Length: 401
Ligand code: FES
Ligand SMILES: [Fe+2]
Image (cartoon, rainbow, N blue to C red; front, side, top):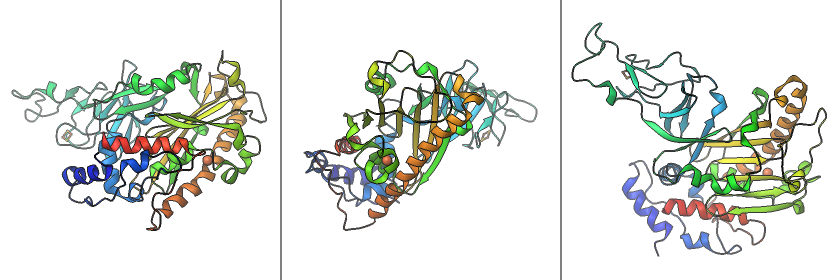
């Protein structure tokens, strides 16, 4: 059996740039695949090494579907937004046909960065260097002076060959996902298990809550620790005493779908807020009157769904030991966006802000612990950590695929 350790060592020697460390010490896959109680966690290097992150980028993130933004950030044709995806510059733009297109953020001429800030591009996307201009479909439209001063075409130069390079993308619950390699499974296949699980929620009804419904967190930890912490309910009584006072550990159940997502559900979702009640998703089965579910869809999006709101948290690493979280909250229909609901939206945002801030300390504490040679990956306990085990297995297998 090829071990993860041997495989990564071989790949590290052959595909990583010279700055990467070829002596990554990784565990055998068998140690991660072992039954709960015996299974080990990922080793320190998986959380601290930029070389490991570079491999994750190529083997895990590029081949899967990853969330990079939300479609409602670019409502009008020509609205653009740049994204740094593990050092790869991308941008997305609303096209005239209403589609959201994702491109590599690089001019086809001399490689200048095309989009440097979020905003409106004007009639076309104009490169700041020699002013080549691209349509929102990526086609190269004009090439000023390419044939000499005042001459904008040139024999032997076919502008049709130099459109922007598009990235395979899809939108689900307003989130923009990309598959950088272009040859991963179809997005429908990727999302089907969760889409079917949550098929009773009509995603066409969701509306982003606006400026007061976005939270940004910068955590000094590896992105995987944010996923692992989100997956499990075990820490609830210790880290979230306020939440635990009405949604207790015993009110939760695990969600484990191999190869796709893991998390937890609560059987007692019953928000107490002042102000008008929020509109709810129509035609939900009775069980959802008190239920909420929270899943990490691998690799980089944390989701929460309730009868009266939905949220998505995108994780974008900034080096091995840092991750930014962008938390977007959505409501059902247009009414909750109005002034009657200003206080309610703020209460929802404040509630999630408090809970995620409580999590920040333990995520960063686990990262600090991974500087210790005395930590060997730890253990995943037999009952409480099935979702984390599911994520570790996925993360290890993705590196081998
Ligand atoms: S690099 Fe973009 S127009 Fe020259
Ligand atoms: Fe938590």
